[in-house]
Length: 292
Ligand SMILES: [Zn+2]
Ligand SMILES: [Zn+2]
Image (cartoon, rainbow, N blue to C red; front, side):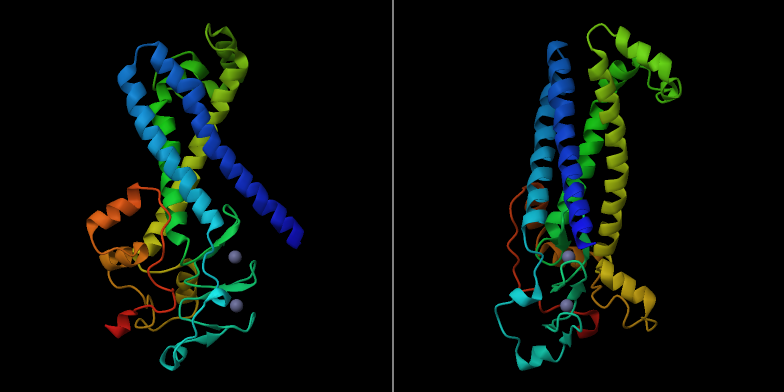
């Protein structure tokens, strides 16, 4: 069972890498040459800059979300003080004393600091130390899928349907035979490129929908100062409103806490530049709304 899960997780990572790669492929193989050779220089340079900025951010944050430790409790260097230990609980599965917001990951068999969930798409846990990279990867992945679909839409239609008409975009999908003829008869693009473009276009639409819904869900949780686990626990057992959403300090403060920033300029740098975050804390102490 464990082996099957490991194979599935590796496959998920390969699929994600293919999705990122195909976005680059759409631009390099289809869009850039088309715009350049048809004299659409404005569109060419705009997409060259924006497209590469999205691509670099997507790749970098994906790499960091995969490669960074989410923050395992066993790796904590410092011993908690007597005062801190009062808030700790013992994990019955791995027997460590864990700080507030740390939970056990059944797959990694370890407790993780501010544990969110175990994500097969990064083959890693999402926890305190890599959560920001995971969220930024989701945001940039959704943006790059949307960008290449929207910016390249006219070209997609030209290749796939031999037509630039916006409406009736999906009509030819219902008439496979006609669609194939349109691709083969196209003067500049061969049938393989046509089918590949159609495949990429559909893949992009699906990826955009899936990643966007995951991103919005993650963002709604962060706005509430919750992790996935805390949301589940709240729904399952917490009936007392004081105990619910313990770490919700208001949406602005929740986002500042999540990215560990104090000013908007710091936040902008974090959002726009793909560098590796060094957490400012050890992830063991959290301000609850009851402490205020
Ligand atoms: Zn544990
Ligand atoms: Zn895990």
